[in-house]
Image (cartoon, rainbow, N blue to C red; front, side):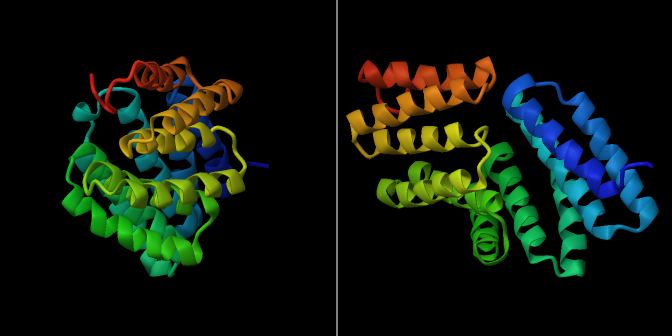
Length: 239
């Protein structure tokens, strides 16, 4: 018996996460997502079709983060999230709508460096996610609100509130691959708030969590570099 579109999408999502957090190998994940999309369309499974489109956009985003974001195809990624969003609105899938709005926010924030375009999307996504979505989607939404207050609005305490919510939601979700980056973000925001030792403690914890979760050498090294600079008394984000 052939796997269903939903089963293929579940496998694709897991494969994509392994690539993003550990292996950097996305080809197998992309093949699975494309299979899920074809199967969903053949079966008339609109919900899984939307999920596959969303996952293709997320896979593109992870690939961009692993390489050079400036070389990413923002328009192609945006198109996938827009298509997923349209189906989810049609289905009145409010959790899915939140996730797709969040994806559009990512395109604008990360790839276009346009916080003015990103923030309305993140705010709408967060409001919907807090009411309708699982812990992971909610965590991602609060994470990027936290980044805004840390890097654009320069309100470190407000940033920390959102980032702490994000971490607690990731702990609730229970996948250890997601936790180190949340601890890392709190460490960076804590340093920006002028709390040097507390920030260093968070970064040390994030390094250990990343090692324990078996994250890629690139991810571990990124946190270790922040820790080294913080211990040397350098300003957050310098260099």
